[in-house]
Amino acid sequence: AVITVTTRDGALSATIPVTVLPAPCTGEDCPSDIFTDAPAPNHWAHEGIDFAIENGLFNGMSATTFAPETPMTRAMLVTVLWRYAGSPKEGENRFTDVKDGLWYTEAVSWAAEKGIVGGVGNHCFDPDGMITREQLATILYRYSKSIELDTTAQVDLNTFPDSAAVSPWAEAALSWAVAEGLINGLQDGDKAYLDPLGSATRAQVATILMRYIRSQATQN
Image 1 (cartoon, rainbow, N blue to C red):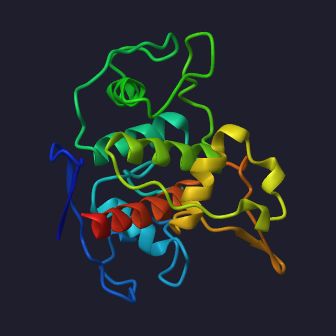
Image 2: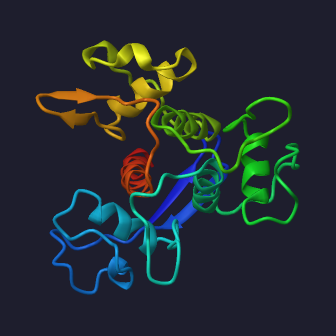
């Protein structure tokens, strides 16, 4: 199957082939089989990791490891989203800590041009900084707005016991991400926590991106 995401005026934004994986996965011939540290088929992140690998969104951290529990950096996330958008050649490098010619330079330049990401001050991007869960929600929210997808869905974040920890600038984005089923609370006993300032791991990002892309398929 192929997902083609278009803006409301009909301008092409992104086209990506999406593989429909068998359900349930038996663990045989999975895309993640090449990695020794890939989670088992019954693990919550298995399908998302398979999806990310099969569709070229993620590479491994080495030839044999995926590093699912490694936190995702700002550079990594922007590059994954840039690949999903078709690797567009847009924008100029405006950050002093992003050198020209690096594997993420074009991605960061594009994301900044589109208003999907901003700097951290003093003309810096902090490419090696760990992406938080609320930053992840915000980046997806801004990307959706940039291609004019519907971002009106909202939930009351006050149902989560740690809602006060959400940064004011991330409230609308995180509310949307929860409403769309992209981000779920982290279960601790009988309560689910947003953990907005917690680092998003590669496994979490793979799963969230799978949900996001499939959600886009229903809008187009």
